[in-house]
Amino acid sequence: MAEYCPKCNYKFKPTDWRPECPQCGVNVLYYGVEDRLREEADKAELEHAKMQPRFDRLKASLIGHPLAIVRLVLGLLPIAALLIPSGKLSYVLPFATQTKEVNLIGIINFFTGADLDIGLLTKLWGSQLVGKGLVYWTVAVLAVVLMAVVTLVGFFLLTLSCSPKGFRRNIAFPVTGMVLATAAFVSFALMVKTLTAELPGIFSGTVAPWAYIVVMLLYAAMIAVNVIYKKKNIPVKYKDVSELLLPYHERPSVIAKEQEKAGATA
Figure 1 (cartoon, helix red, strand yellow):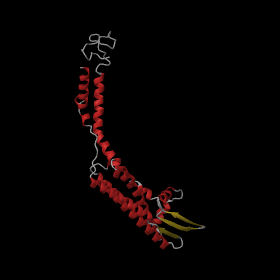
Figure 2 (cartoon, one colour):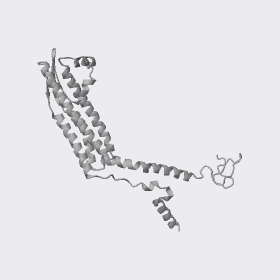
Figure 3 (tube, rainbow, N blue to C red):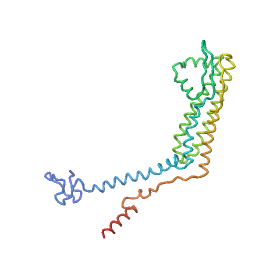
Figure 4 (cartoon, one colour):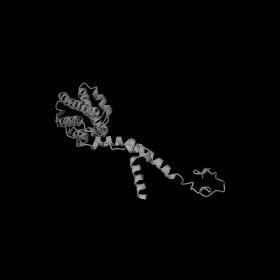
C-alpha cells in the first residue's frame, strides 16, 4: 500500500490495513485508475496515429489500385518464366548418352546434385579445350541466379512503392533483371556454340529463346505498369487520424459525446 493517500494526502499508519483511506474513504488501489488507463490508451492511440500513414502507404502500394495489383502479380512472374526450358544439352559418355533441359530447376539440380565436383569444375575452367565454354556456362548460371535474387528483392520492395524513391526503385529492378537475363541468354548461346565446336560428336546443344523472350516481356510489362501508375499520379488514401493526436478530452468526438450526455441528463 502507498505511504500517503493519493486523494487527501493522509499518511497511513501501520494499523491502516484496509484498502480504503480512513480519512476520506477513497479506495487507494483503484483511485485514479481510469485516468491511468486513459493515459495508456492515449499513448497507444498516439502510436497508432503515427503508424497509420505507413499502413496506408503499404496498402496503396499493394492493393490500393488495380494497377498496383497487376504490378504485384507481375513481380514474381519472371522467376516462374525461368521454368520454361531455354535449351537442351546432350553429351555422350561411355556407354550412355544424356540429354538435359536447361531451366531454373535444372540449374538448382545441378548445384544440389550428389555428382557435383567443384574441384573438377575448377580444373576444367583452366582447360584449353573446354575452359572457355565452361566460363560462358558459369556466367550464364550466375546471371540466372542473380536475376532470381534481384526479382525477389524487387518483389518484396514493392511494399515501398509509395515511398519517395519507390518509382525509381520499381524501374531499376526490372531493368537490372533485363540486363541479367540478356547476359544469361547470350552466355548460354556462346557456351553451346563453343563446346559444340570444341567437342564434335561428344557435346551438342540447342538454344530455345522462349524463356528469354517471356522474361523480357514480363520485365517490360512491369516497367510499363509503373510508368502508367506514375503518370496517373494516383494518390494514397490516408485515413484521417488527426483526432488521435489530440489529448482525449480535447477531441471533437469526445466533446460531442460529453455534450450529448449532458443534454440527455439535463
